[in-house]
Image 1 (cartoon, rainbow, N blue to C red):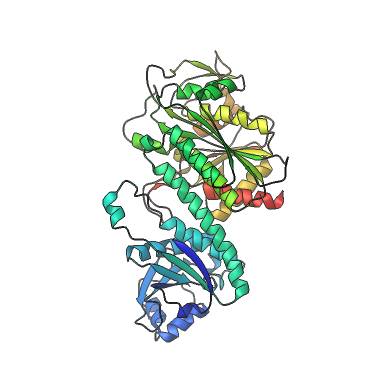
Image 2 (cartoon, rainbow, N blue to C red):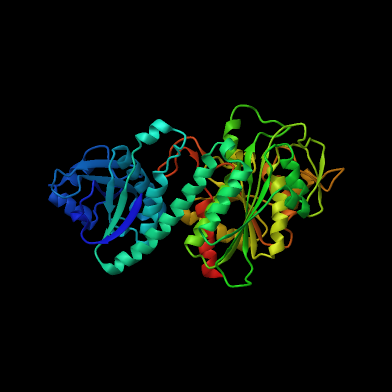
Length: 504
């Protein structure tokens, strides 16, 4: 889908559909809606008076223009209560409309930012434009690479136009639209990686994908294979990898958008390209979904891509410890002891608690950069979904200011986080009688014991851990979140970096 900004009269735009936002039970329509209502003989009044469409979130009403204006259809989209209108409400409304338009086979859509900001009181035109681009771009995503028949008959929206009444406003809108396009395309890039079957997204393929992405975005990419990983002493990471015939890859991405010599922010993404559980084998039911266990790595790639394209003025490093977790005669066993890169020894209680082993070495490697802060993002614990359901990311960390920054970014992009405790008490559960620690502390407090384990490998540095296991796979379509891999967390980290660059 192409996005385009024009200067002119949106009512004169020759498109398949004109989109107009309507507030829930509002007594006052936007000026554009009022003019449409007048031209079409009170059609919006009639729609609002009958039962059905009231302007609630996710509601869409389609009106045939009858040739009165160049647009063939007028789409009324519900924005919800006017006092609550913000970027998220606009994203949801545009996402719902875009899906309806695509399913109708429409090719060109148009709207104007004033339709959404006339009642919002504080949302700038560029924020509205960004929300529109994100809502539309994220909603129409579909992973159909392996569905040949569907690809031959697929319906796509070709162009989404924002028509503004002045060049000054159009320039502001262009800025927001460009950011929204880059962000939505980056999220969809991550979704593609997550949705690929594991046989087509091995550690080697993920590494090759990272290299290609980096080459096109002025990012330095270094790929370490087994000899290089061994040389670093990453025994925990290699302990996960040894059961698979697919060799591991340690992917290092370095984006230098900040000042020369400035300390970077390091992002570590869990990148288990398939997690069978290893010797501690998972149940067959749902195992196919475990291709999504590299979501953290996919998101890290998406964030670096967006950072480069948005020219975020920071130095950013992305680290992806990529491997499969498979059972075999060479796999690690419960009871084995691994020596991590930090020198700490780890007793394996469950080979299905493998993500933290790979992350442990990657996090310790991150400290080599002497970074401003370290962030990690991982589908780490099923316990997070039990605790928070499917609407919140678990957040833990050792720095109050950093957590507050993350929480603010999360609220803005509506990829919300919920802080959970990182008390020293939880370390008692992972103490080992034969090693420095265990890789699992049992079912109780699973989110916290996993995080306290990771915290031992970043000591001395501000750090936030994001457990995305609860939000990274969607079974039911939402306005701009399709079924399958969601890449939730990507927009959060992009926003965090954008905000960080302004405050730093």
